[in-house]
Amino acid sequence: MGIVNNYKWRIFQSAFKQGANLVIFLMSAKVLGHYDFGLYNYSLAIVLFMGTMADFGISLSSKRFIAEFYHLDKNKMLLVLWNSFLAIFSVSSLIFIVILIFGDFFVGSSLQNILILAPLIFLVPLSALYDGLFMGQSKFREMALSSFFSAIISIPLAYILLKNIGLTGALISQVCFYLFAVISSAIFYGKFKVKFNGEILKKIIKYSVLIGIANVGYFLYARIGVFMLGSFGYFEEIGYFELANKIYTLAVIPFALMGNVLSPAIISMKLSAPLEVLRVRFKNVLKYTLISSLVVSFSVFLIIPTAISFVLPSYFGSEFMITLGIFLTFMPLAIVDTLVSIGFIVPTGKVKTSSVIVVLGVLLNIVLNYFFIPLWGYVGVVTSTAIVYNLAAVLKIVFFYRQSFSNPSVIDVERV
Image (cartoon, rainbow, N blue to C red; front, side):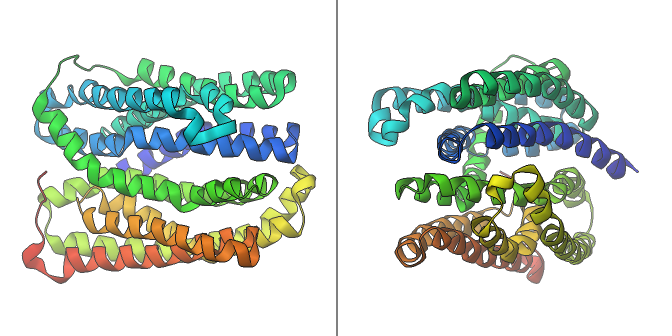
């Protein structure tokens, strides 16, 4: 019943947070022209990438250790937030300084938009940190309430900004969205200690490096397409790509939520239960997730085209249908990979091989883009994304199973 109740609150939280994000996304698509909407997504992708670099797995690493300290040492648990904040603030500040000095070189004509979005370099990883700490302590109710209050403030403000100042308003609305998310999370979080602890900070950073490589890779899997499209001048097509990617993201969310809810139980099982119990749980989850992912993908195929024709008729056409069709070719395996990664790979500490696969996948994606774009243009970007998603998902699941369950002598609690 604990997992079911937590999953319920996690669904509420995601509905509020991702729902608000989706509403702002759709309002931006409605109000902005195709070119400005593409430029908006291109600029946002760049800054979100910086935010992902600033986090670099610290939020997920903190989630793991606060869950372990919750069972083993309550005093250390209270120190995780502050020490994680110090790590994130340091890296975010460094990235911000680099952008101020070398922004013209890195982002060129998009610098003005990037500077408007620059607070996200701090706010995105802090929001992810609070989410991770909430989940690590199974505080899903508090997490949902914080998302609710930030959502009800962000949506009307975004509408006002979009209507009055267009593209600039869309960019500012994203900053406001994450700012309110961080403030509301801080209000609902509860007790923590403001005290530096080198041992805890070292553990968090050491484990975060492995997760961070994977996280950056995950971000680039889809968003490298946005960067490539922007570099080749396909700004209008970025809108179609991001629309399909948003649909994919929404389809994945329920499985990511289940992975988040499942991970504390997997950590507890890893610490106390026999290996065979964990293996049976993994196989059952894998089977039912694959079946569910096929059902979800088929539902997207049936429902989404009609929905887009009503909600965003200017985007409904051959470009969108081709993009959605290619996304559907990797959606089932990507969904399975998402739940396995969040629910099993990260909490059991089996992230090294996964990180290598992710990095190689990003490199392959870049190489394929340079081959496919001259041949097929915009469609080449989507095709390379599909190939990499499918290949990486299969490799990660297979290697995780072999490393975790095929050779019992190497299965042990990996202390970091």
